[in-house]
Image (cartoon, rainbow, N blue to C red):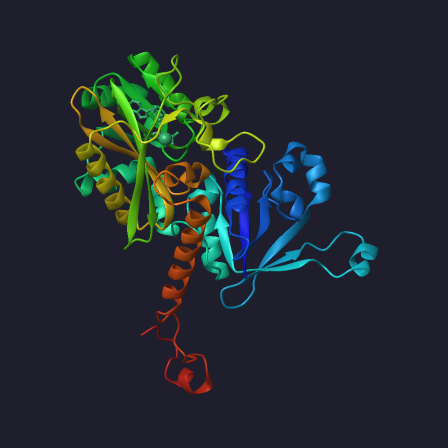
Length: 408
Ligand SMILES: Nc1ncnc2c1ncn2[C@@H]1O[C@H](COP(=O)(O)OP(=O)(O)O)[C@@H](O)[C@H]1O
Ligand SMILES: [Mg+2]
């Protein structure tokens, strides 16, 4: 039996969305193989465990949650395990009354969205702790989180992206007019402005005038010190494709076309997570909001076979380019006017693990999680197979005599 640390919550705006995605995944785990242990990162950064954290209702009252859950610290547990240990209670009596809770985790199932959970930070923590973790590694997670670097990487690989410029806080302050002119001269109007490393449409705005562009950049810079200004695709169709596997062996799912609500021109946070759904994709219900699975969408997207195949092929190429693993979702934009397909962004931990795209692709949710965990274990084993330290102590007496004061 494999103990799976299901990591959820996190210090990011998508905290609640993460809870939904991760609980869906925990519920889908094949209990013959896996035992889920929830590891909840509260908004203040404290880590908790406890069986109640597998129930969505526990998250409705955060004060009650703190009573029901146990704060924990992480310790490297030896080869391939992470030891989760209860933080000692304040009271001496409590400390003496019972031994501290301790769990050994064999693999971390990262169900965090946005922020440190998706940008490589928590992935790096798992690397340093020596425990396998699901999804992409530090590199793919970090590059994938940055909309500017992602576009540059794709552009270099010959994948179309809309024209864009990157703007940093220190380029902007005091040189606003010059920067506005630069954006308008290189890109024209209308434009879309985005914080470079956020998600869920937060801080994203469309600009049809110079004044609107000014306001949009000011606003986006409140969220991130790096901002992307890009050409707006006026007659837009959005198409998403999930990819599952390892950097060398990966397959694409069926395509989805998310549908924005009538009154908005960009898919909003509301559209993505808070819309009352009457045609949701089904699957595992958590009794609460349904996360990405509740967005109105057409699955499979109504595209001709050739376009479908070429988007799937591009998605796999991008997954491998970013050295992704587990399950990711790559989002494209089609310009209806020209038929051009552009890479828009990559989500290395997609909402609801994209299960609603894998079920119609013939891979049920339990199998999706099984393959994701297997990919994590495979990467871990392969990395351990390489030489990482030398079995010679350069600080031993004998070695030191030849080493004095030189770095060689
Ligand atoms: N270049 C663009 N032209 C038109 N609409 C866009 C463009 N870029 C983004 N959008 C709209 O904004 C939404 C959010 O942008 P996206 O880049 O996907 O960021 P997020 O990480 O917040 O999802 C998209 O789903 C789309 O509706
Ligand atoms: Mg998006």
